[in-house]
Each structure stands twice: as structure tokens, then as C-alpha cells.
Image 1 (cartoon, rainbow, N blue to C red):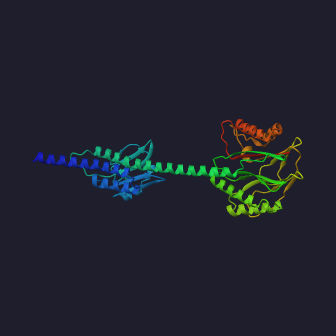
Image 2: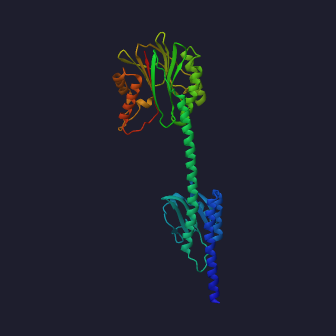
Image 3: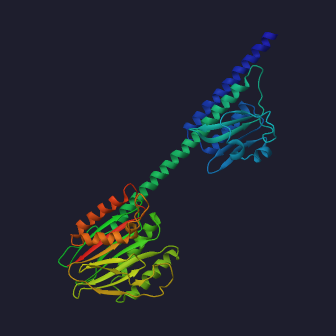
Length: 408
């Protein structure tokens, strides 16, 4: 009779172990079949209850925060556990049956689930039914294996989805960058009246800087440089909208005051005052060599002529910060032959070196005095080299745009 009892116990043990191995196979099939997160958790619950006969358990999983993903039989105690304070200190399996407090009352073991030193989950299990021939330690280790398999599979799935999302966003940003580059003039005029050259470097693929050249009629042209507050996609979208607005009305207003009022209104209408644009807008008449301009809170635009540098800073405040501009004072100046107008955004003057010192307006003035007689494309190349030498190993911290205008 004793031998028959032992044989029955042995058969039961073999059947139990086979069922638990089947559990791992079922989980593998579920993962390969791309079961949902909730589907995998329900399968894990079934394994804990049916195959391991665990009377209580809770699985804390970290996603954006720690949450009890499954919770059976001991909810009140589980609800009082603070994962970061009470569990994060454990890196290996803990037997808490003789833990000196009631913090884990009703649970026997804490099973950390760790991958690449990252704590992904904690499985707490209570008492489980064991036959006389079963090993508790082996069952706990097997639960650790199953828990790791499920949680790491879910984490890998999450990381894969995140990677796909990043790739999708990257492609969209790349397309947006290509579209934005199409809005920046690729060809600038070079004729008997003027020669323009430019440089544009967005900080992160998509920038908030913008420059343009617009032919009005046979003797009048307009040119501008702008800087949208902020960086990235939102700044780029506002810049594209602003360009469309400017090009649609630039030749419709005889008065610079009216034009700037309209542009300010449109920017404020779009942003509600949350974003603003600094801008320099100039109108040049070849017939009388007169430059009319408005500097709307932009950096001082530099005019080099007759060996001197003049700052063009008449105008108004920034665009879009207020529903109406309080005061607009356009400027007007006669341009001598070979005059050079230097437009730039603050990404140039606020460029920093290894010590945190900014490039600044004084260095730019000194550079212009030394290179003012060069052809504009050559000046651009020299200025690019000057920026690289100045910043050393420091990355650009903002969009940089430069527009040089030589008037013959």
C-alpha cells in the first residue's frame, strides 16, 4: 500500500510539473501570437491560480508609474505597499514570511523582475499548495522564470512600439524639414543692382528662422529676416504661415505702418500672444537708392558703407505679443554704392564658446570691418569658418540665419 501511495504521489508530481512546463509553452505561443497586454496578464493569473495554486498574489509593473497589474486575494495589504519605498531595495528573491512588520502580511515571497539592471516589476506571492515531493524553492524559481518571460516580453514590445513611433516621427520631421527648406529661397539675385548671399542652419532639423527676398516691381524689391520664438516643429509651422501671410500682402500696402499692423494682427490671431516673431523688413528702390525699413524687435541690422557701420533699428516692438502695435516708426536711409546690409538672427551673436562666452555684436562688427569688401558668398564662407573656430566643441544652441545684401 505504501508503494502504491508513493507511486501516486510521483505520478501527481510528474503531472504537476508537466502542467507547469505546458504553462511556459502556452505563454511562448501567446507572446508569438502577439497577445495583448491584458490577454497575457489573464493567462498569468490562470497559471498562478490553477497551475501553482497560489492563494494570493500581486504583480506591480512599471510603465509611466508603478501599478498593480494583477491582484488576487490580498488587495488591502497590496494597496498599502509603496513600490519605490518598500520594494525597490530588493534585487533578488526575498522570503518575507518572517518579516518583522505586517507590511507584507499574507505574502510569502517577493520576486523582483529585473532586466539589464532595470527593475521592471515585482511579483508578490502568498502560500501555494505543494505535494509532499515538491520543492518550494524550485516552484518560486519557476515563477520567477515565468514572470520574467512575461514582463520582459511586454517591455520589449513596448520598446519596439516606441522605436516604430520614433521612426515615424523622424520621417515626419524629415519631411517637414524638407518642406521648410523649400520655403527658404534657394536662389538669390545677383545682377547689376545687387548681390545677395545667405546661410541657414536650423538648430534641430526644423527651425523658426526665416529670410526671404521678394521682387515687387521693376525698381522695388523687399527682403526680410525673422526669428520665431521657440524652436522645433511648432516654430517652423508658425514661420511657414507667416511667410505665406507676408508674401500675400507685401505689395498691397503703400504704408509700412499699415503692413506691420496687419502682420502683427495675423500673428496674434494665430498664437493669442503665446508666441511672437522678431523681424527686419526692408524695401529698396533702385531708382533713388532709398531703403525704407522696419525693425520689429529684431537684432540691430548692420549697414556697412563709407567705412562705417550703421545700425538699422528704427521700427516697432515684436510681432504677435500684443493685439495691436503701440507705435511704429519706420526708418529710411540712402545706400551708397557697394553698401552692405547684414541681416542675422540671434543664433549668431549668442553663439557660445567652450567657456560660455557669447560671440557678440562687437566680434561681428570687427569681422565686417575686416571682410566688408569681399564678395558676399566669400564673406558667408569666412563667417561660417569664424563661427566654427569660435564655438570649438560646443554645439549650436539656436537656429542661425544670415542674409548679406550688397547694393552696387
